[in-house]
Image (tube, rainbow, N blue to C red):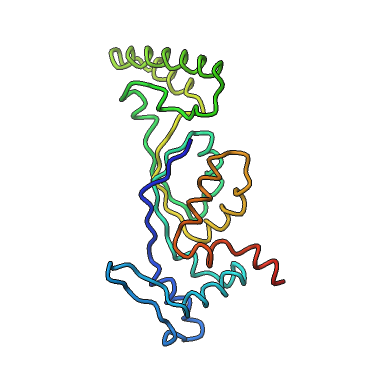
Length: 212
């Protein structure tokens, strides 16, 4: 299970202006703000950005200046793989250490959509034990009980993080994970494809190979 929401794309104007700095071609920029206050890239700027994007990472430095922020709720087993992309990412997460005891445990706290009935029965038993332990910890503040919760917590436990990345990082994520075994990565890649100018700036590696 993965949920991706509150997506924002920022700094398009500054990034595309910077892309024109090497050739002093600012006069050719045709981007503008629409009636909703959104920055819309014109055909000239899209064409320039696309040419730079397919030319390789040395030429598409402007993509590192297009920032994306999103809230992602995903299981710990997915976050362990996401943490591969520590470069050019920032994340603030909900705190397991401080807040694990703050609310009752329930199935909704875990990614269990692929579990068999037998596995669900085992999970339900674990949830019941952890909830019993949580209540004892709330009452007694016994640190040993807190350790029980932390060390018993399965990798299917869902965690919310607010993540900021850039388009260059998203290129790496998309091409490394679009055929991954985990369905969560397919959902992530589908969301990447919905971002502004993803076709022109992110989904470019196959095109670059065909041109070489």
